[in-house]
Image 1 (cartoon, rainbow over the protein chains, first blue to last red):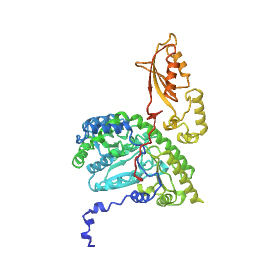
Image 2 (cartoon, chains in turn brown, blue; image 1 turned 90 degrees about the vertical axis):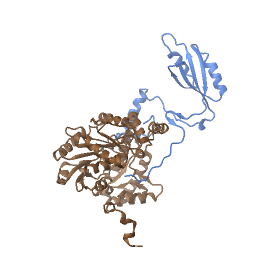
Image 3 (tube, one colour; image 1 turned 135 degrees about the horizontal axis):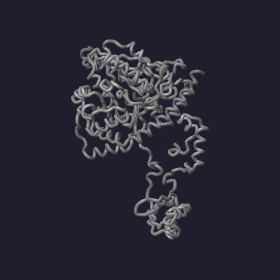
Image 4 (cartoon, each protein chain N blue to C red; image 1 turned 135 degrees about the vertical axis):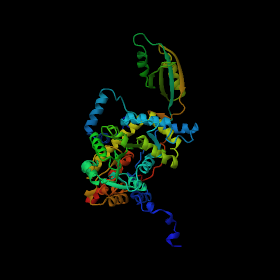
Length: 394
Length: 152
């Protein structure tokens, strides 16, 4: 039966089947077939979750904390989140109405986009950007509008470039700083500029600040804390990166009550609530995790210094990342495309990096190297990469 | 960094801190001269020292006029058998860790050298049976966990 009508594929909507496959997935298949690869392609902390947090989850399990929680999330956790947001991001939220606990930032972003976008609405976001943004926007029947960022401006999105992409359908500005994959970060001045732009054009700002605790420049209050911004900004954050809790899948959204309420409608019908054990672990992390978090940040910062120095020394220009755990060196001097570079480096030297194009077309000429891996592996990988680059020139 | 790994190379420290090797060396020298770094030691597993017996000793003492606990503490610390010595709050005053080659050796050290010191009122000896963690280092092999090879 080769008739396409009879193939299970015809049940899948055009809407979904037209989504492109993630560029990372192809690469993943390639890496998975090989042994003894040092991977700089793992976008998650290499630290295992600090013991006191795991222990709190075990205790919660022992205590039978295994039921549904409030749809919004356990109130104690929401209070802790709002306290934390006040202290670390400089913006006050009401735990009863302005905070929603989600299953990672991924769910938070998905339900937020669905809550605020109508079909055909446009979303501006800096590119290179996180791989899920464009598909998530399209799954909300809206239009992703990437705005190129460049190494010339340390990958900070420029107002003029945003202006050039504005149309009457533009509704949302989606930001992710510190940035995956470039490591870019915003200064206070950058934030002011972007806030002015959003206010001037009446845009909702979605600020994905999952890497905020991994900042290596002077921290400044969140965009949401600037005058006129609280009601037009939704903060998305979570436990994954700062507390090494990726597998717990625990995130949160803070923002204006009406938007949170709209998100909550989708969340309650699709997810009910975030896992209660993960919520218990998150509460422990927020209450007692600051020292562990800071120790991990310091270690990442030191690894960043080592990696970036090595990349520049081998002739791959790399801007000093301001945050996250990614270095984003330029590989144009090798004459290879991002994909060729990554594929050959993998095949010839058994080092996995991610081609910049996985993060959008403007990632061409760059690769993403993650330094959330042991210093030993970083040293070895940088050694192999230097040999590879020298071999290309020889 | 040195507290976690005293053997870390100057080059690695310099790269981690984004400064020169000379600057790191100078900083370490200064810490050593100011007696902030007082020594470097290897942490070894129990198997490596199967011929050793360790004990924790609690000592209750009568502090001396003027010098309090310090004179006695300095005297006790001079014994090479004493690995660590702390003045602690609670039921007793000093907590010592002693190393010897046999139970008898430790027993005779306690009786012959510690208990008879002027000012010592009583001692209690606890022989160590197994070591799980020392100097912040867990002695069991590290936890193994798996990560995907590629994550966006």
